[in-house]
Length: 303
Image: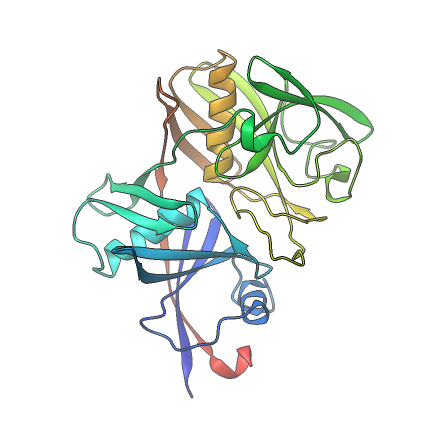
């Protein structure tokens, strides 16, 4: 019986399946992706990493969300793919670039076991691309009032390879937070296409972050955003154990507000990532990647 060969990895509980077209011949479509990513009924994952496919002389990566929609970017997903390229011998250098939908991303292996990967995540936009929401523009930051669990919160919007909103909190987690709030429903008080971070600042070197990411409904024109940076058209939400892109958003915004140092540890339910926001606003994301194993799926399961 023919089988589809997948490699599974996770970055602090944010798990992906790598489907290498050089090892498989499969018509990858929305239904197949949904079947593979379904927990309990499939393999289970937050998304599919398809590649490498040589693109402009670089190993190219296509990211799919667990609903089968294309994605622009994912901090954890790209880190996982970097480790896969090292593990499989596609790259030999400790520093290399991966071609993504948003252009090349520089990756670096920082550990002998290839388990710690750093990415150059580029620079955030505090307005510009993030101006998809209504709000007051103040000191380059877009502000918006958001309603969750019948309470109004002041959010600050920015774009780190996908639109997001940061809400500063005295505490995160527990009842009444993004996990139990009416975030999944369309609401005039909330921007339509965003990811949300609740952030507590214990001290200048640490952030505690809870994340909600939109689910996805395909638009007619197929407009999408990222697994780590938001889906366009979503009406459902889920709370991943970690998100590299969202960790960068939280660090950039709190740095902009003068609440944290250049380099911080971002603590999420799945574990901790290191984020450095340089003086020129270039963001470096560093954290562990763990290899789970090889999985063989019967082709008939996907037909």
